[in-house]
Length: 285
Image 1 (cartoon, rainbow, N blue to C red):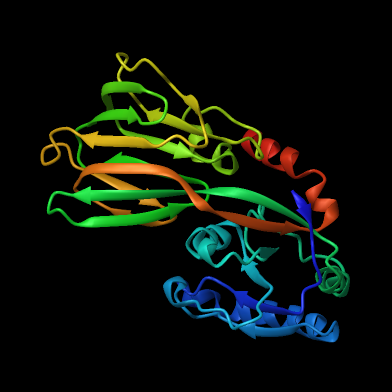
Image 2: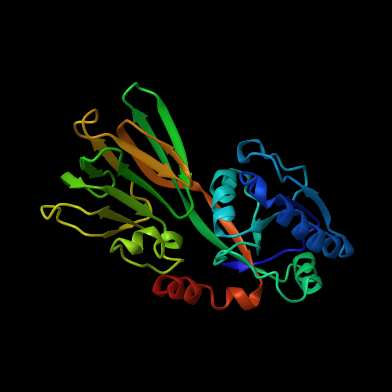
């Protein structure tokens, strides 16, 4: 967690996948942009551009994300390599990763222009998986990455921790979730995973509906742990990996670790001060 900086140029992002939301997004743009420009901030739109084609202009200080948590998750992990911070304004349903646009938008714009915000830095998960045909697939996850069964039969998987020697072999389950602290109050927590502080240097591994023979229900691991998954009987017990809304199936092997990249999410001070409790309260809803 560290302080902000004066912003002079920002790119606006919104999820282009739902065309029915185009009117809402345009309304949000019409509300926000004039206030930013009044503070001398150059604003340009990347709305409607698929995340893999987002290319910020030189000198871009910040991504301004309009939407909810799903929109932030859609963009943040896959743009983490750009090392540009994200400031979210909640025009979605949840918004725990966002600032509230309600109230004085002019004040929000002044705070962005003057650097009156706090940056929280979070880890990003990365997975490299190989399928039955030998194809390599890669994905990233801000909240979590998980393996799940694709057939009525359970997954059968060997799990190996590389840096801290531990093997859990084999595990019969519906899937396995690996989550960051930011995601520990989400899917993982809903299947008996352990909640962690959002700034703890750890990741968690949680089998889903595991057989009684599995020795762990959830385990907290150091952030520098690399986890190997070897799928047993991969044609009979097909498994897919899901990362930030993308999925790849028919896996035989997956390697999961924390990326060298970090995500910086920006919050105005009044939101930043109670950020840990916001995520804990979310899990208790």
